[in-house]
Image (cartoon, rainbow, N blue to C red; front, side):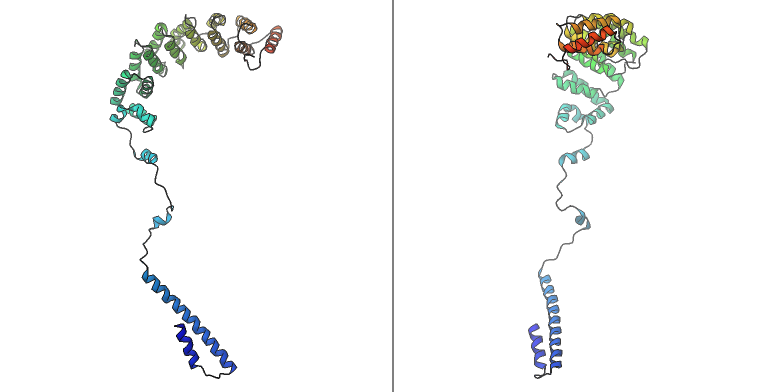
Length: 337
């Protein structure tokens, strides 16, 4: 078209135009060329557009979404879409559900708390489970049961001939409110009758007096005092550190004095820990601690612990000098040197 328009204008122009006419002719030629270019461009666009397939319509939501969004993780979808486990799923394999991460411990406990049939099935499964880890997990789930049911579990377990089962019963017992008279009776009976040192240690170390009246705590205190002087050193060592929270201070002095001279080093260490925790600071205990700290046959850690406890006593000038002398003999960290 451009080639046709320009020659036609040129053919119609006078052959011998003056200078002014020549300028007008050149201006007219330029305008015609520009118009031709514009028309040609629009026609070209229309031709190309007609040859292309239609453009799909993009929804507004697609425009606002990220261009390369990855699918939602399976674990996230499961956590948000799965409901609480059914009773059948829970009872079928609660340990496996926890290990696989399919259900959280809180989910399972919530189901135990609300469903009596689930508790009954878990209790049956616990009673027959040979694996200690499985029993521990099942027992932890059952601890969400109402207190009345837990008291029934405790009564059954603490009377079991298997020490491991009795230990499980003591774990449940120490997690329940000791203010309950029936539970206190179970505790006192166990403290007086338990013969397995490990089971006894679980019970002694787990019991806490809480807000218990002196009259109600007295049977437990007497039982603890007896255990602090029991024949098995493991039991003595378990009872001594927490004895002060049960017994009156006036009754602690002879018990701790005997323990500081015990032939078993664990018992002596437990006595030092008990004296330190109780705040008992009688002259007799002060003298016994100095004897232990000055004993070259005692291990350095034990001697260091005795000195540390003595630092909380009121000392005479002579005792302060002795303290400093003994302190200089021992490594600062209480090691073997």
